[in-house]
Image 1 (cartoon, rainbow, N blue to C red):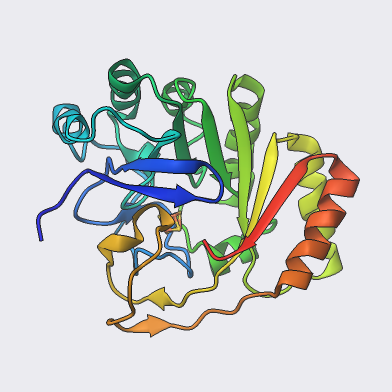
Image 2: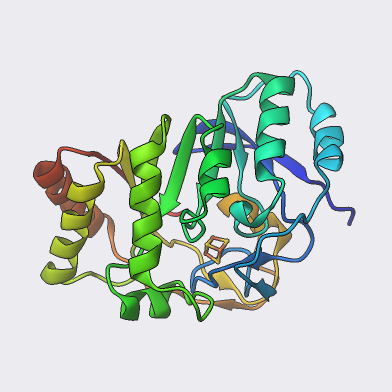
Length: 260
Ligand code: SF4
């Protein structure tokens, strides 16, 4: 199968009709290896930025989708998009070409880097992952590269919040029920950050064990003709109750859904 750096469009419950751009490419690459990742086990776990796909190649693929009849163009793809060193250039040129709202889904691990924050400032919306309120939870759920810790990641997210002119969503995946203390810790962080929106999720699909191209951007995978791991998930009542609690205590809009 030939590889395309632009894919979709897909209907996203969070962003509407969305065309995806993958700045990472054939080898899945991320600073996390989340237990629920629909890409399968991350093939290249790294925190160093590099150019994976030349910007020109992405623009050529994007041209094939003109006139881009979509609500947004979303950069996520085969791993963590902020690892792409040409992220800023890609965003600037995609905006110039399409004039569409731009969204980036990030795990937030590179937000301490001023170049990453400057690139993301070119977008209209950013969704940042926050699945953990302790290092233990981070290691268990997100399984980051060894040098990452929650304190530094959080510092980057706060710095980004202070500077970013667009809309910031926090995206949180809950696998097994959080106890009251973990819920309170999360709510306290949300009070500090004051994002524009929270998106709560629980995984409804099993995790593929090996790389699955269709999992890019957390898209729906068509079938399960490959080995998978069943994941823990919470039910709709739990998500709704927690969503109501967060919204009441923080005033931040919370949207929730079972599935990615
Ligand atoms: S879910 Fe996102 S952050 Fe987690 S491993 Fe997959 S691509 Fe990386």
